[in-house]
Amino acid sequence: MSDGRGWNSTLRSVSKKKQAAIDSGAYKRAPRKPMKAKAATNEGWYNWAVENVWNKREHVCEACGASLGGDDNPPPALFSHLLPRGSYRKYKCDERNVILNCVSCHAEWHEYGHDALFYNTIWNGIVNKYIALRNEANGVR
Figure 1 (cartoon, rainbow, N blue to C red):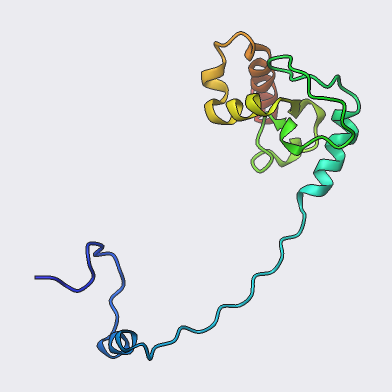
Figure 2: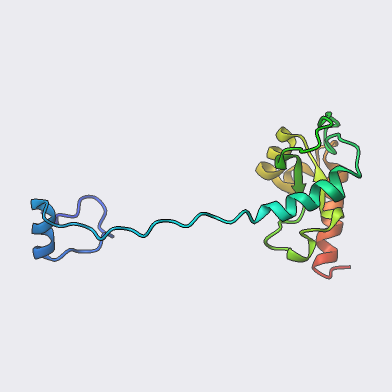
C-alpha cells in the first residue's frame, strides 16, 4: 500500500484540498523575493594579500617551487591560508598564515590536508609551519 509520497517517507504530508489544487494546476506558489547581490567581501582581503604577501615574496609556489608569474593582479587561488579564515579570524590577515601556492598545490592542500601531506617531503616545511601556527593560535606550548 502506498502512502502517495513515493520512496521518500520524510516528505511533509499535504492536505487533500491542497493536493487537489496542485494536481489540477490551480495551486500557485507565492513568488520568491529577488535575491540580493552579494557584497564583494573578499576584495579587502585580496588587496591586503597582494600588498603584504605578493609584493614582498618571491613569486614561486612554496610547495613545489613552480613559477607563479610576475602579474600585478595575481588570481586569488595563488594565496592559501594555512589556518582557515573562518575558524581563526585573528590570523586572517597574518602574513605567516598565508602562503603562495600554484593552483594544483592549492587544490592538493585543501583535498588532503596537513595530516596526509606531512610525510610528503615538499610539504614538510609548510605542514610544520601550520602546526606551529595552530599551536600558537590554540595556546598550546
